[in-house]
Amino acid sequence: MYLLRYSEIALKSPPVRRRWEDVLVANLQKALPGCRVRKGWGRIWLEGDVDHERLKRIFGIVSFSECELCSLQDLDSSVLDYCGRTCLDQAETFALRLRRVGMHPFSSQQKTVELADEILERYPGLKVDLKDPEATVYVEIRDEDCYLYRNVIQGAGGLPLGVEGKLVALFSGGIDSPVAAWMMMKRGCKIIPLYVDLDSFSSESALKRAETVVDALRAYQPDLALRVVRDDYLKKARDVMREEGLENYTCLICKRRMYCLAEALAKEVGAKGIVTGESLGQVASQTLDNLFVLDSAASMPIYRPLIGFDKVESEKLARRIGTFQASIAAAEGCKAVPQKPATKARLDRVLKIEDDLKSLMEVLET
Image (cartoon, rainbow, N blue to C red):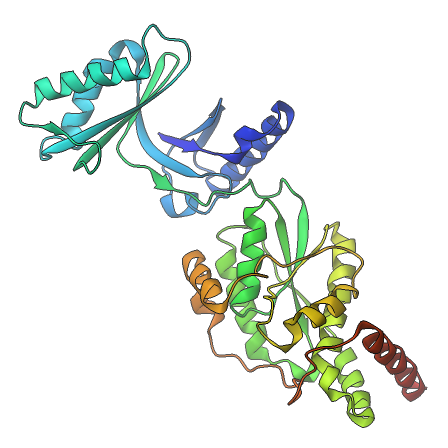
């Protein structure tokens, strides 16, 4: 049996709490189909053969413990038996941590002292050490049921996946975009990753890398599937910009086009915004001026969870969530990046360029 804990769900109003608990239970049943799931006030219990690594990746679970169940009536003898089987035969110091929920004729402190005295009587050479014990025994009393456990394993935390709706994530497969997608998953958003294939400027290796990274993120969202849109707009626009001496605006025009494609997909699937891995000042297109220009390309919200991260912070998180190795796989970069990209673009200037490009491309097509 496993005792699962959540945190933020408990802060919600009763109707929201019940709804989010039900979403979390459904996510657990999908991820661990061989287990039985039941919920109680503030806790969820799993029974069955549990894959710890899979459980660690279910958003909404802040921590979990493998535990044993006993009745309150049998607690004293069960604690002594549990300690003897699991930890205290070899330990020299121990701590007893007790939590109590419900109405009882004793306080948590009283029951802790009572149980600790019985343990010390059974193991006379043992000493209490509350700061750095060799062994820790946890007791959680919930009405007439008691749960005994030794370890607390950290979970993914956050909110249950799906409670906040869906977002489209612009997905290159590099280090930043999967980390940004993961951060919004953690806040309860289901992600639809979108890879924009820029015709002759993209490479098969870059697409393969993106697919591999999606495979890694599927540990957190099992139904994650990469959408690929092949688009030749940049090829046509770049030829015109080169002739007009506007090549330094290539990245901005390209990204604005990606925002438009992402918004179209978001409207199609009922998503509520777009996620990107942009970080302020990291590259030329991510200066404050240029991000302002990019925002106007879409009418729905743009979420940038990495906006205040530096590269080291993004890499650290990528390693922790398991996407880093896939993201650094060899892949050919975009072939359209200009030698001196614009870093302080003006929105009116970019809008004028796009209008001119549209007119020129229409002429060329006719």
